[in-house]
Length: 68
Image 1: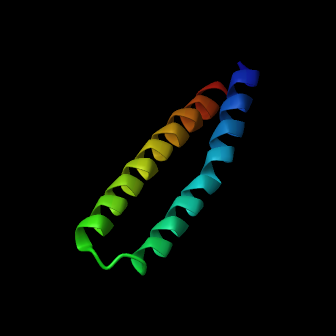
Image 2: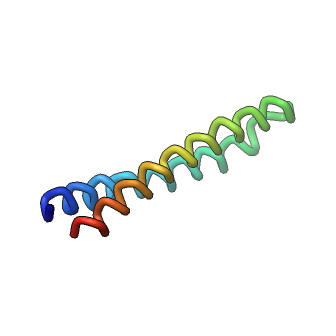
């Protein structure tokens, strides 16, 4: 059980920097597009990506705390 918890902690820890990278791409996209519909589509896609990464982090963090 300790090995499962450790694996969950490693995976959750590896996923955390990806949130910063995704947020950086949001900041870069604000100045590039003058078209509002294109910008809102890009923000929507990025928001979904953040949500998916957050769910993965939550699941593996739960595994870490449950098995450690």
